[in-house]
Image (tube, rainbow, N blue to C red; front, side):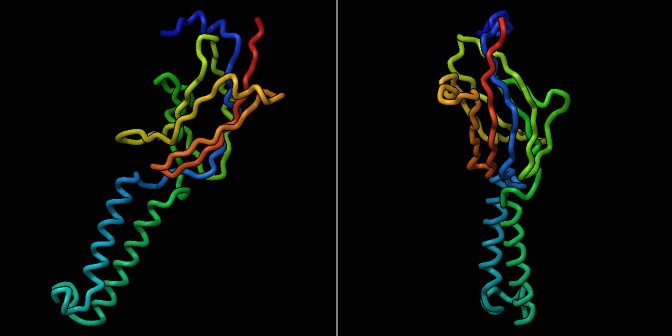
Length: 189
């Protein structure tokens, strides 16, 4: 357990200068997208059969069969588009040591692809911590989604005269990509 006095007297601080959203997560959770895609494919296979093969109940004429095929293809395309990343806003927040650290004044920050936000969030960095791990999360009604996690060590800043680094954070499951601009600041004693 970290001693609060060591945190307050930390010799360094990690400053999260900017968060750049390269691409937001999928509009639907990956599981829902896969389910819709699976259902659309099944329906498309059934409707792609000729009227007599499809059982005649759903398509009794060639024209109805073509209309149903068109509807199935449209639905399948729609399901694919729902799963495409970048089409919506993420409800972003940051977590450190299992607690939310940003934004402080609301549940989350709505961010879209191409947008940059500058939280200028300063985290005390005591010597007892070799690395700091921060998670990007997306607020959700049921269960929040991870948009990725990054770790940063003080040694990451060794080759930077300005003591700045950029971390790329991705989530394969959610499809999001973020660039996090960080600065290592020395606290005055």
